[in-house]
Structure formats: C-alpha cells, structure tokens
Length: 172
Picture 1 (tube, rainbow, N blue to C red):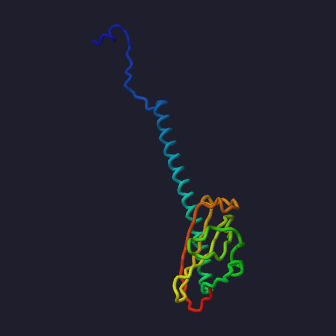
Picture 2 (tube, one colour; picture 1 turned 120 degrees about the vertical axis):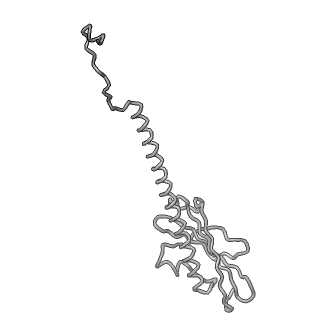
Picture 3 (cartoon, rainbow, N blue to C red; picture 1 turned 90 degrees about the horizontal axis):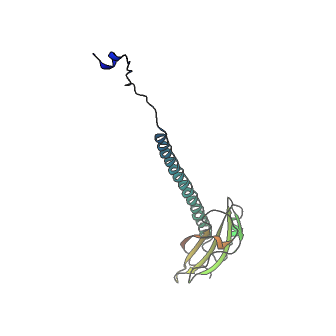
C-alpha cells in the first residue's frame, strides 16, 4: 500500500524537535546582558560621584556656618581671629582665600582641611546702617573633585553666606 514499504525502504519519522540555542541567539543574549551591566555600572558611578560632590558641598556649607556663627558670637567684631577661636575644633591656618566682595572690608583669609580636602575661607564685613547693623560675609572655595592640590587656583566651587549682626556698641 505504501510505495516505500512496497519497495523495502523503511522511513524514519523525524518529527522529534531538538531544543537548543544557536550561536546567534547566545551572542544576542550576551550583548543584552552586557549593555544592561554597563548601564547599571555607569548609573552607580554617577550616583557615587554625585554623593561625593554633595558631601564636599555640605562640608563647605558647614564650614561657612561655623565661621559665621563663631564670628556672630563675637558680635561681629573686627578683631575676630578664627585661628584662635576655632583651632581646637578644626585644622585651620592663615592662608590666601577667595576675593572679598565689592564694598566689603577684608577681615582675613584661611585654609581649613577636612578629611584631606582644603577649603579656602575669606571673611569680610560691611557697615549697613548707622544703628550698628553690620553684614558679615563668609566665602568658601574648594576643589570640585575633592582632591587636595594645596592651591586656591584649583578651587572651582564656591559658597557664600552673609549674615547680619546688630550691636550699637560696635567699634569700627
């Protein structure tokens, strides 16, 4: 009845399927995983760098606040000496610092070192009114990468804080 059976040929049914991956499918899967891994790594690196920069800016802000509050605690006196007032708490020395703002009188410039990063601080003041009101300015500069190069010229970032103190007994 069957032609092949009549002539003595035995046919084997090849309907069984083998489940395997081709080399192309494997390479595509590896490429997808590699792209995902590189994307995740770049994201984590960026997040770590952003956290580091935020930490540096937080320290600069705290430095400005420390100087401002210590100076404000001395009623904004022009005889304020941060090296004497703060040296027991932080690593501070007289140094060059950022430029003094226009119309302000320079009080001093200092270098503060926190965890191997130098922050350059300039203090200045300005008489605001005849009633003893005085503006106290604190400017802090630092290197954006956090690397301690020991030079103000390498400090690209800046933070400025101005506060006011009122004391009718201020001596200019």
